[in-house]
Length: 304
Image 1 (cartoon, rainbow, N blue to C red):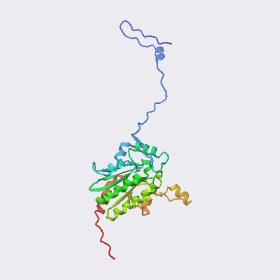
Image 2: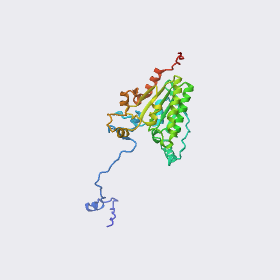
Image 3: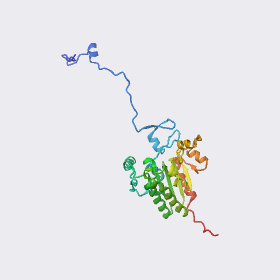
Image 4: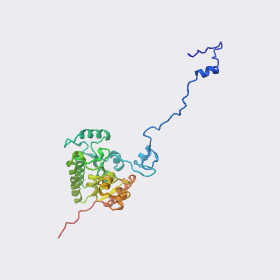
């Protein structure tokens, strides 16, 4: 039935609506409660303890849960800002890009997708910068780029960083975060293990310090090469560190693994790691270690 038009009396006042007419014109009311969602990008539920925390607070705390101390992944550029002094970092080989030496299926497409996602050219950022009062050679791996895998470019960038640090007499700090060698490059990726360790051997001959920092995760070919040969090896809390994964080891040995196996705490207890340093203390601790190591003089020549 069409609604009746309401008349206006002589005084120009609209008369009140009768009860029946009011019910006729009343709009239906939805009895279901309206859901009000939380806007994305404001709150995060900790995957370790389940506590809700404000993302802004997490960023202030270096992406560490305020409740349980769980360390979330940190990108190379984010970590760079927590380690070096402002405007002091000189990046090296920023434009170096991987190629496809073996014509592996879909490898080029994967590289393009990773560059678009992470805004990096490959899985490591290298350069020279100031850590408090120390000028250092710095390498930071990024797991978001193809699992932080080490291919020809990653190995070459790290080797060039080490060689420059050797020539200029600088200590080296490398943050590792990797799933291992890059399978798409086959033997070329495995060669990087020997190449980086060879460059570090020459660096050590100059009595220059190398501090290796292991973050979650550091596995396989990276852990089996340069990451495990530091003068000082430190790690973040709860980092997964090892060669093969625990499932592979369990299936191979047909035995149960001990609690906390392949964590930084387990490896610290068994002597592989020298110290576990929380992320918010990392910069100060690295400066302290470099103060302690200091510029070392050359040893006296060996005489029989």
